[in-house]
Image (cartoon, rainbow, N blue to C red):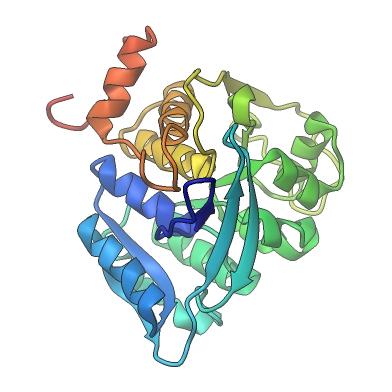
Length: 306
């Protein structure tokens, strides 16, 4: 729900669900794993997935559950405050995650999930040779690196915004925060910076530090992509759009720089309309946008017709 002068309005949402829809609009085949309640909101979410060609075979419906909801207040400049009302949304135990859920998958995106469930999912993906991307979100990032170390070690990418970076590491110095995460087992750290764009950090291949060490002495590499300028209506879901675009880049075999461009382009386009999904772009829209920005080489590498 977004609250503005003309509202309020109701939208299907949820961070991981937005990423799923974003990827589907970008031409990927997507399935969603999670829970909803047996209420009108739960039916709305499943119906919205179906309309967006997202496979809901592994969405559990809890008949007596109340589907998780949030209230989002948006100001005239597009900034927002989120109030979570809680409810049915997450898998409760690792046993609820089954390897068959990943059959045929190339990438697993793990959003807000209980740490033991997230660790089980990331380890399953690793055993199956599937790339895993972990974005703990605001609540779970507050648990810190000790509680999340198992997920960090098993995942291939970690995505955080600036506040989540601080929540996890308890330092506002970005370089120090990145070193902490790499030292605790994170392989590649993506930091979204709002109007500052996004950066990807990693250490040289073969030089990953062992989990539990105090620092990274090898230094790290950084790729940075400045933000693209657009008219901002609502920043809700911008980070989810970025994640979808970056993952699409990984699916296409793009390098870090071009995957970052894809992510930032999706994030820029997503803020141009009210609601978390209203402006999630198609792949062609993203490619046209990048060409307009002078990014002639930012085309996909494996999708027919691109």
